[in-house]
Length: 448
Ligand code: DLL
Figure (tube, rainbow, N blue to C red):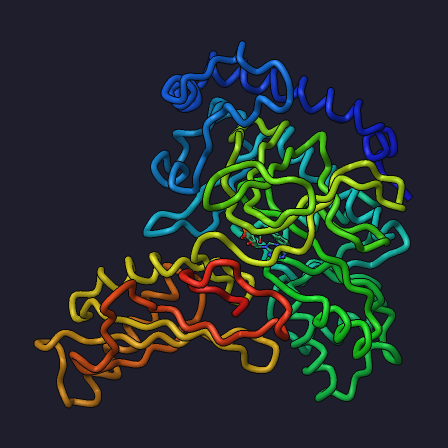
């Protein structure tokens, strides 16, 4: 089943021509009307006339997450404020978050992408779909909500948390499909067991659309065998719009709607374009975005691009499972956290010294983060209540800025390890059952 067969099954050559036309129009428009892009292109020495084919995209300058921070909040927007109809906010690398704005058309293309994706995994009007992603600033909840409504499913907008109640609702309302993080679904499975609920026997839940964090084939097998739920990978980032693209029923990679997003895979060290099938860093160009266009945005996810024909009949290229990142971003319970954000928050607290260690582990199905923090000599005391108060203060500051619960352990001055070379402040012991290895050992890596 297709949502938009004309586009989804468009002959490859025709799709490339369409992509070129979109790119050309985008570049012309931004060069003429947007200072940020105009200046960037000037510095790079490239003019819209130099773009005479799709391959010329490599002449264009990159965009980085840092740009979104530098131009925070709306200085990168290319439409007047009265055309912006929504904001979403994601983690920035330090104090400031990343703001994404949407016009009506931006929301429309986001929903269209999700309608295609959900249809491709067989979700439609006969389904009741529970959306257990966070609603609000995070894109997961609202994105999937509108996508599921668009395909005619009955939507149950539970959001995150209240797991026992979520399991009861799955039973009571005959929920057939769910969208959440893979780790949350596994956690749900554990809680259901304790409640005496067997998903196969006691529910109609048979499909899950899982993403927002890395997961593995063995996790898929675990979900399918243990819970009887067919699991599909969904990918997206707030900069692109939010969750957008899924695998189809063949499950041989995530289909990227080529009329909406153009993908390049580059060698993260040399910046050279890589051939299909070679693993590298993904760089994306959003061909339709209005409020906040993205040309050659370095998304930092590591994957491969596959242009082979898919047996489902869709001609769009596919990316393989995301196997790591080319930066140090951690994903904790689906929330993006940069070590630099933690450092930034700690530095705002006068009693905290400049040594800290971040330990990330998995407890049951869920991620857990412990932060060891050295206290300054003058702030260190053996009065237990003072130390407990300070610890709670640090924990609540971290919660405020990072939006995740972190357990803080206070350490005496000089107690934490010092490093002669590059400091290794992140110890991540989560395992995706040994499948995914981070390509760069010098970076902290959630897969090692
Ligand atoms: O996580 C959007 C989303 C919501 C995707 C719900 C899927 C489902 P951000 O918070 O901006 O947006 O985080 C984007 O999460 O660059 C990847 O590193 C990671 N990520 C997202 N989906 C996957 C996935 C949402 N399926 C960052 N596999 C991305 C691995 C994923 N990593």
